[in-house]
Amino acid sequence: MGVIPVELVGVRVEIPANTPMVLLREQEGRHRLLPIYIGSPEASAIHYALEGIEPPRPFTHDLFLIALDELGATLDKIVITEIRDRTFFAEVHIMAETGEKIISARPSDAIALAVRCGAPLFAGDELLDENGQEPPDEPEEDAAEIIDEFKDFLENVDPEDFV
Image (cartoon, rainbow, N blue to C red):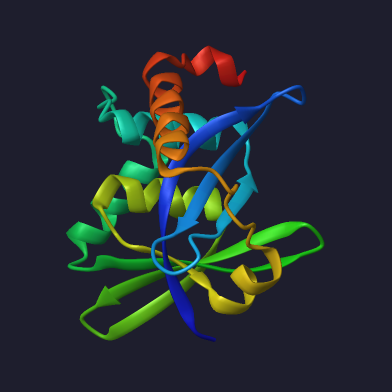
């Protein structure tokens, strides 16, 4: 399986279903979009990490990264691998003294880890070929405006919005 670099555009709530989702975008080439619906707690965890909010005690994702560090391992990359029965799957690639380890994970948890430690995000090429959405045909100014609106949303969103 080949992989394609993607970037996290952000977390948002789909209206009217009030369902949180993350939006990934292919970094080069066609810039296809990959929306992934996630749970509210995971949306909050990603949002907190994007905003740099430090909890008084480590959240589960923070604890996982602390444990990796204590064990001398690092999170190398995250790969969103496939979708089966409308469920996305991901892999957490860890570099340890004994070599690379790959752990299956929910994409939302894997993305929350990546945002916290700066690990790169990838999507399987077949996944993007089959599920990637072409970006809207809009002038660059309009795309920048949409991203600015989305950033404003992220700056003003409250964790209670996800409950």
